[in-house]
Amino acid sequence: MNVKISVIIPIYNTERILLERCVQSIIMQRYQNIEILLIDDGSVSKTAETIDELGQYDKRIKVFHLENRGASSARNFGIKHSTGEYFTFVDSDDYISESMIWHAFQIISETDADLVVGAVKRVFSRSNVCSVSKKKVDYKKLSSDDIEAMKGHMLDMSVKQYQNIDGGNITRGPIARFVKKKTMGVIFFDEELVVGEDTVWNIKLLDQGGNIVVAYEQWYFYAQNEASVTHKYDENMKEYIADKLYAVQKLVEIHPELQKNYNALMVEEITSRLIKSFLLHNDNVMSYREKKMYLKNFLKENPFKEIYQFHVRFNKTGIKLLFIKLDLILPLYIVWRNIKHEN
Image 1 (cartoon, rainbow, N blue to C red):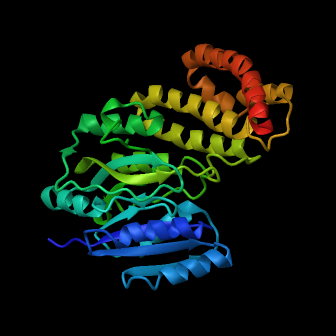
Image 2: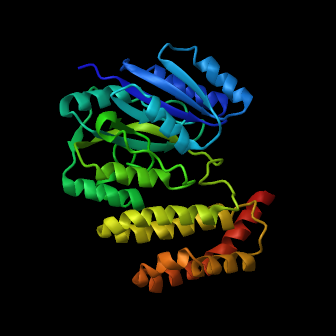
């Protein structure tokens, strides 16, 4: 069995040293029957030139230059233009274990899996490449109950069996996954979503059922990036969150057993993304009073009013607790942040 695996790398203005690290970690894989698709999502000319240079490193590399339409569009392009039986995504500022593709191939050979998922470890942006020396990786074929549990995990990251795996975790991103193109490659990313497209994609992928396997190994190293959509300041963050919650809510209506996980996701989106990445961001010049009023209005207007009315019991407790935390934590955070910047 000699399975060809496509490695799809969407790229947008990635720093040269990080992009080289990413590509090198793939070129040096023990498993050699791969193709590497560098999908340039409209980067500046300097990055585009670097991508062309990297394209000369290895005959297995294919370079595509596109207009900027976002990571989802670049990933979809990669799926459509990949020629391997399986495909996997690697973000351009991340890197992978030297044995990741080899161990995935072993699992595929033994199980004919439709989807193989490995563990992800967060690292500092400029960390040195780590390697894994295991000769063979442990894995588990998921039962229907396991698959349902993973769907919930894609919403709130709370399922213990998908945490603390060899020092990493199963994440809701599209990374550290090997997808059989014949059976699951028809699931594309929603290009209208700025945030949350990976959550929706994962749940739709898991809805396909089939032979899904979890590998108990740290495969992928995710570099913390403060310039990502999750961290950067954007005045349209409210609209991005609304779009994500509406898209996920449609899936929850099909899977009512996920409502509890969805409640937790809503709290995360408000506390982590809206408050941390918008209200508390250094580039947000609103006063504390304005920020608090913004959050109150946020929860009263559509579409958020509709979303919270969908979970009446959560509405009575979670929102009150949220405002209590905001009253207590927000002033302290602002003081701490100011002291930190002065030093």
